[in-house]
Length: 129
Figure 1 (cartoon, rainbow, N blue to C red):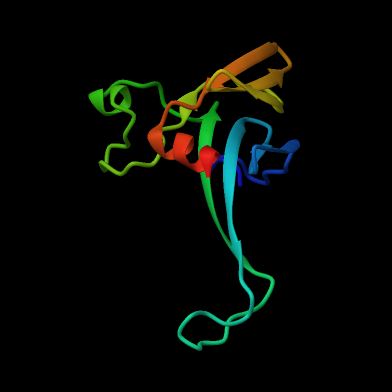
Figure 2 (figure 1 turned 90 degrees about the horizontal axis):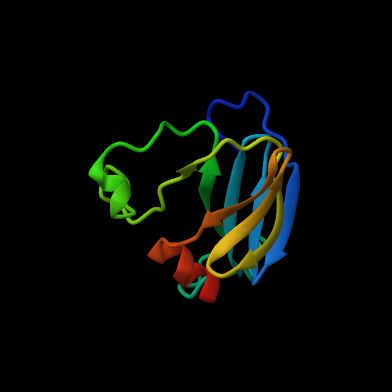
């Protein structure tokens, strides 16, 4: 977790909202979708380590993201045309996740509350599951 520029990222805040884990570090906010817990054997009889689950995590907002400039941002896709959400550049300073409201994640920062839009289709689908 954290941004590539953070030397030692530490979790400042973590909250489960609608079965999604939202975490914040000093300058980023991320969501983590937890997969199914492995039971020890997959459908093909192959042994797997029990108690392990797959995760998908996405940076939602970061102070370390370059300012948007290309058209790829306007259609909600990365430059490599994947469906992964593009992090929203925000001046975050010690964000703390508060709640989900009206399609946005409400976050408290040292400069006041901010709303991080969760408009990407992948995020919307993941939140509903």
